[in-house]
Image (cartoon, rainbow, N blue to C red):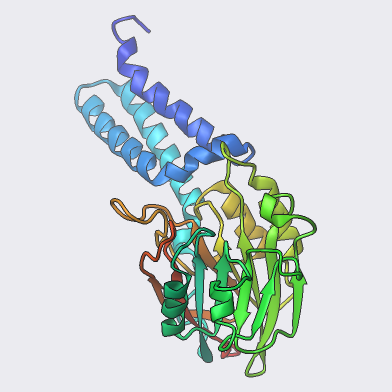
Length: 319
């Protein structure tokens, strides 16, 4: 390749390296972090490659046109692989049985308006409430909801965990997944509670994951969650603040390991304020006889996360 022609290949080389690093994210958490922004750079890369392909072909530069075509095919294959959860979610008509309502909210441990949060949650009239960064203390959201939601479970079972499941009805059984100090990230902040819904059992796993690289080491915790939260049969919901988006390799692997599918689509929940939420890091997954009826994002209530509100059906899949 002559020095005169070399600059024309620079863009293709850079995009080729980016694609290779993105694929390596399947095994290297540090590289998987760049996939959080994959919707942006994948769209830009494909646009550039298709324009380059068109221009090079019409200019008679067949070699460069072939490289652009190969890279475009690589990016399309990458997109089909990594974004699969977004179009392979829970079927809205999969279940035709009883409906239930669930609210999931990282309320922010420093939230100064606990009463406003409790009022908003009560107004949604959910059957189940998932609270993250919540405290069981005087004046807290969980205490204010105690009368209507008397059954409250946390990830350790001793009140010293900020990942909570609240319910109007008692759980059939509860598994506290934390084996240590979950508040200082020395244990997994998650629990699973099984409930009876008109004769049908549903397991709800609530989790608050640490941040991925460079701020934390999340991949090992996701593997731990997959190991401890596996339900042998029946319907299950896995919900919470994952501090990650559904299309990274780490989250794809969690979905495969637990045999769960995305119910919350790609509804952005973080951050609040400014131009608005841009990343769907609070998510709801499901498996078994579940069907999505309605999904919405709640307002900003003194937290950097928006709450999620979901109505779903369970049962009626026998046919």
